[in-house]
Figure 1: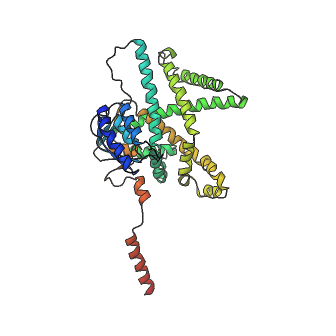
Figure 2 (figure 1 turned 180 degrees about the vertical axis):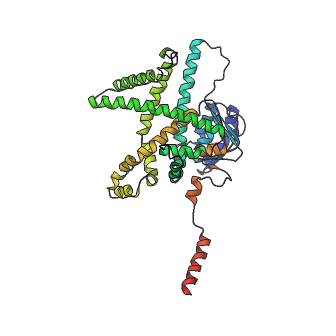
Figure 3 (figure 1 turned 90 degrees about the horizontal axis):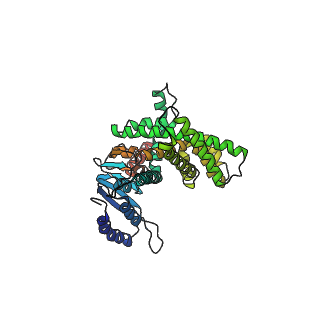
Length: 378
């Protein structure tokens, strides 16, 4: 996939994709060198690549590879792969949606356009989080055995697991990627304060009565968000709901509901179960093993959720931060930030593929066995 992602590219690649899918359901590898293009055209290609067939076969797995450049919509396509790779010198650029057109704008249409772009940026941020959360969680799990070293290094600070993880990956990032990470941390701090404030109000409301209609619950959420925004902006004399406040209120409302929906979803529960072996203590694993098999997943989620939820919520904040400004990343940046799985030819980077494919050297093992046998015979 080379050049601009436009209708011409869609027309050229469509018959090739259909041909590959008709030959077999083996993985399809997409090599990318593109400055991006319209999201609609990228989505058309992605929909085609992930399509089933008339026999209801599972979609072909996608291996995406950036050879030189994957920018804008091409970066989204790269991260959408089931396994995403990058050549060492390639670059990956993320930014929010752009508007292309020559229509004269009015105050009303400008306001609607700004709302549309902001809402779609939030939507794409959540989609990116869903596509790539496994990669980020894998980085976190891999780095956990180094957290004690980080805490010893910063003894004067109270370091959470998330703090330790971000400290470790920041050492691997370029200067521009670290600026992005810092923006994400600031955004996450605000998200955390908002969620804690609103959830506290909702908990108190639930204690009084749990027979509320959806509009009543939403009214409680909106009131709590309004109180949070007023308190957060009390020192800003120019801030009002008439200006940026009403838009922030809308963003907060949809963010809150997306967070609540996802944190309670089957997908997040599956993440907890998948990584529970790496998160639970030996004693907790023994206790879970003693439970009836049907009760084990629920207990795994209960134990793993408090560990993974802060990491997941930070990653959501990071995906939102990617939609602001121009975020030009190196291949190593994209790897450590969980946007790709592997940098081709780079040693020392913990890829999931290498770990899952690892097997002891059978030849070496055979020599050692013969040596042991010879020693025993002597």
